[in-house]
Length: 144
Image 1 (cartoon, helix red, strand yellow):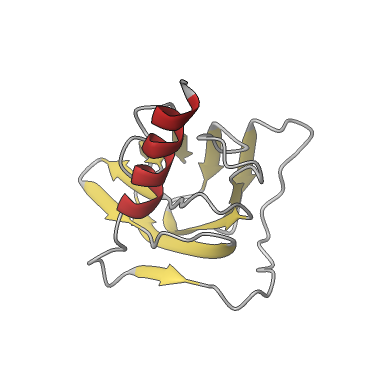
Image 2: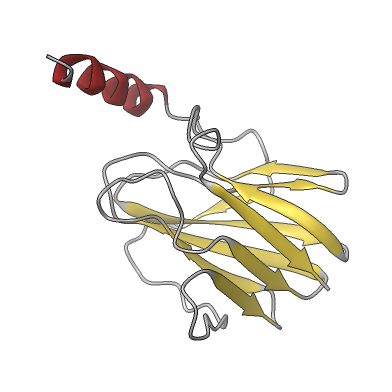
């Protein structure tokens, strides 16, 4: 009988979403084309770095509340995080820290990106969909 409350909670999360962004700097790509980030993800699935500012991030196809990486590294300046969400669970990416607080667009079965101008330092990237960050869907972005 635990199935019904779990399904109800999942439905509530799905319907709640994060409603998009009032941030005019957020960019969305839902065209179905694959962005060509120049980021390389190295041999570890837990981190990604970029010298040009484009970073790749993905949510799992099974709808789990996690990203495929928990650390990202970029050079100071305009940094774009390309998020691929192949699941029907809504996800987005947001960045906060050092005076920055920007949310990207929420997508299901699609792709989106968020571009922010960042100074050197540590930032937190996370999913702004209610409950997702609290469930651990976040990581550290180090800008050099």
